[in-house]
Image 1 (cartoon, helix red, strand yellow):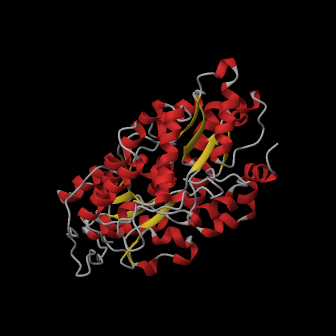
Image 2 (cartoon, rainbow, N blue to C red; image 1 turned 30 degrees about the vertical axis):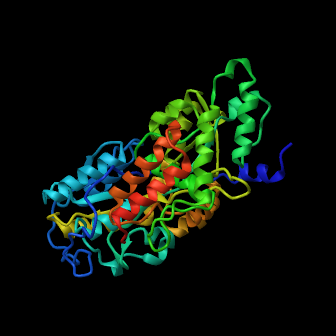
Image 3 (tube, rainbow, N blue to C red; image 1 turned 60 degrees about the vertical axis):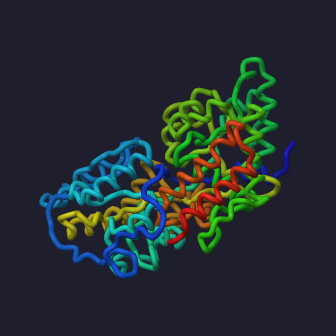
Length: 438
């Protein structure tokens, strides 16, 4: 029997909601390209009413258009048209950058990964927003801060996100396992028991997003942070080369060597991994909470469970702070309409809709404290704590170059091409060459 701590963890499962970015964009040095003297765009006058666009990644859950239909019904002269981009965040980001660099008005309100905000703000691609017109006190503080750059507001949180560990409850039950794992060691032990069953002799144990893209940055950051390491310190200086970071990275390397993490996982982005999990090729899968409703429909409640990210060596699992904010393109024409839409899209009613329909983590504190919500979504109190304790990816202005450096230096370790110690040293050198800034 495992400790009661494991059982408690299983009943207080954490849920949250999805994030990512591209490879390199731009060179070193100060690339703010901004119109304001402090490196951020000047506050817009927000004039002009009429039709506008809302731009985001692929709406996998199909919940956004019905929301926009409600806006359009109430605002027939200010209709919003949704533009869906790629399912991959790095491609989404590049599309938005291309639009900004051509100064096109095709994109107006944009759903941006919260880690893009410093870059988009510094380069003048999104406008500073009138902070006094938004109810800051209603937002989770850590989430609100993701929309700021140099103490000014450039994007309003629309959803938050934190990593979740999904597990195949039905497969574990066949091996006599009825409790959710709370640690990395639990998962490995469970995998060995399941593999002993003839029908599951080749099953994989664990996977996350390990393809070379932004999802890898998220997953390797979580491994490093959980072990007590960091990639950039509080002054945004390179600090990856440490014993703690090496331990976190080595854990992933060892997982691939043993087969606990299947080689196939090197090709996994969010949806590829979800498909493998639902098909029963892996037992444990780290993903965002948007998966919950999709997997529920695909294999049913009885087949899977979910819990918080696993601890390692007694240290609690640390999630990257994901989520999406909405900002207004500097080249949008009908900015008055766009601003009113941002207020509407980030209000409590729309938050509630996205929670119920798409398993997205709310950004308003009161939704976590509502008794009806807690009854319907009993994971909410744990989710709130998870988001508050999450660690953001490096909030560097040159985020495209930063995440590319992380991927270029660290991804080869998963294939056994370089040791974690050498890879982390190489990463520090790359980041030092980029410089820092926020």
